[in-house]
Image 1 (cartoon, rainbow, N blue to C red):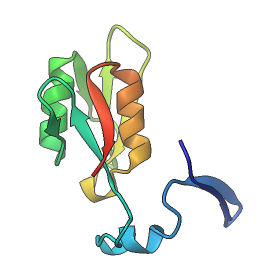
Image 2 (image 1 turned 120 degrees about the horizontal axis):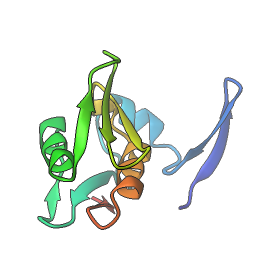
Image 3 (image 1 turned 90 degrees about the vertical axis):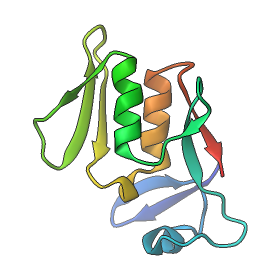
Image 4 (image 1 turned 45 degrees about the vertical axis):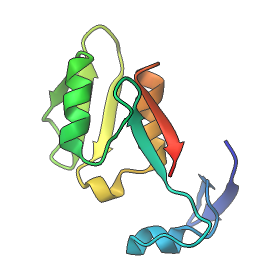
Length: 113
């Protein structure tokens, strides 16, 4: 993983594509900036919405939690893992993708688009 550490408003975070923050806000892609996509490994399908993601997660044994109206949350009974995602798919970032990949080894991968 590469990027630049940015200190802003008292918080340090890793920015994978420096200069892409302005691009992400408007939904446009700057030349040379690659966006990340979540891919279901078995079908090679790019996950483009939460309905598709939920279907894949359910087939892997994940159950949906409805406790927090601001989040989509999934839990797998056989583990202590919890996947928490923003309700709005446009706020679905690479950190959420990597969380899904780590908790579902060999089922998903993150690729540059």
